[in-house]
Amino acid sequence: MKQTGILLAVSSLPAPHGIGDLGPAAFEWIDLLRENGVGVWQLLPLNPTGYGNSPYQPYSSQAGDEIYLSLEFLAAEGLLPECPPPLEARSRVEYESVRTYKEQWLRRAFEAFSPDEAYGAFAEQPWVRDYAVFRAFKQTNGLRSWLEWPEAQRDWPLTRSDAALSEVRTEVAYHTFLQYEFLRQWSAVHKYANDAGIQIMGDVPFYVGIDSVDVWGDRESFLLDKDGRPTFIAGVPPDYFSATGQRWGNPIYDWELLKRTNYDFWVRRIGYNQKLYDIVRVDHFRAFDTFWKIPASCPTAMEGDWIEAPGRAVLDRLRESVPGLRLVAEDLGDLRPEVLRLRDDYELPGMKVLEFAFEAKGKYMFDVLDRAGRQILYTGTHDNATLREWVNSLTPAARRKLRRFLKKEGMCGGDILHRIKLYALRSPAQLAVLPAQDVLDLGEWARMNRPGTLGSPNWEWKLTGWDALRAALRRLRPEIAARSAKGVENHA
Image 1 (cartoon, rainbow, N blue to C red):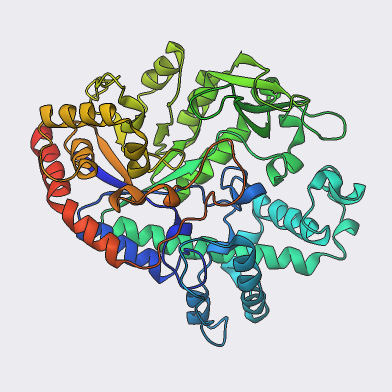
Image 2 (cartoon, one colour; image 1 turned 90 degrees about the vertical axis):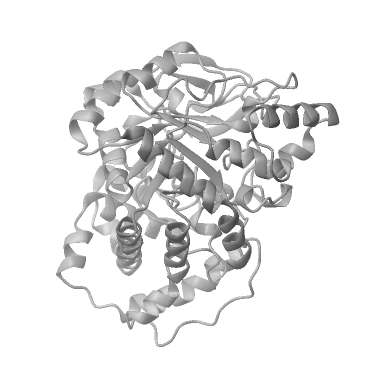
């Protein structure tokens, strides 16, 4: 069956307290998807954002960010005396001020919370314990990286010293409470979506951040020096996005160590995320085949080497260890053929982006039929220009050629942005995904992220209401319905 998906970060939902959350707005969004026949909601990572507010540099690959907790639902649980007043509706998330505002209410909710048996079982999970301790230590150290903590706290995963916890037990309990509430709220959203016939596609970064519980608690799994600092870091060489490459700064895995431990690190990461989502998209999938290894001393990503990774062994282990695993390979960019063979050998859906496909010659660089049944076609992703921004960047000649191409393909009605969306929705791809910004025909100001840059305005775009999106989806509804019906017809 062919499906339509919408890419919209939870942070972008029009919730009342400065950022999208897991409260009523998430349920309203699911209702809107169901009403318009959309079958997949694709998210960005929900993990606690780290440096630059990036969801791809999280403090944990399993924990959820407390900034997404709904204060409305905490009040409904009786953990707050009343629902806190809404903040002014804005089209950008001001992360620092939102965290400050919400924290005062989250701590009040924690004070009113009474642990029960379910909470006790949740708190005993090793990842929960380690994450809560990590965040407690981070709080007492002014949010500095664990590399700068006192030795007793820096090396706590090695010693498990009770003495080191003596002054942070309340803070540990607070962060355990936040994770418990996050899972409760997220589980309710996930169930509501599934009951409405909607699947949720989560996103898992290939790498983890250096300032994360993953590295702090399992540093032997990474290429670090004796002080815990990376000797090599991840990124990509110069490409479409950056002339000097992208120097992400994430530590590189010690694949030899991971092999000796039967890749348990990956089983824990992917296995937990498969429980949270229906489909798991692996960002930078190509690193399962080859990864760009940059010396940590290099200020850019221009210097490095492509190193082969044991992707087949990892995927074999995941397939045998994670029931119901459904992976999507983010296979964009200039890839060697082995990456595509790896994807196809494991029958993983891959991605194509229309913006990257169009050439000045007016031809498309790929045929969406080349992997019929396992193709996901995007108008764009969180990392590239919105559709309007991209079209505006074309030369007049390139725009004319694009119009001629669309006309030849039968996309004749409406403006050029609408016709591109029709092309995606009428494609034979298994799944056609439109970012909400493209559904709304928004320009450069609504772009979610510009690779190779840090901080504002990345990750900040937010809806202020539903009216425009509701109207835009209504316009696409007949095409979405026809797509679904055609998929059922072809399947029959």
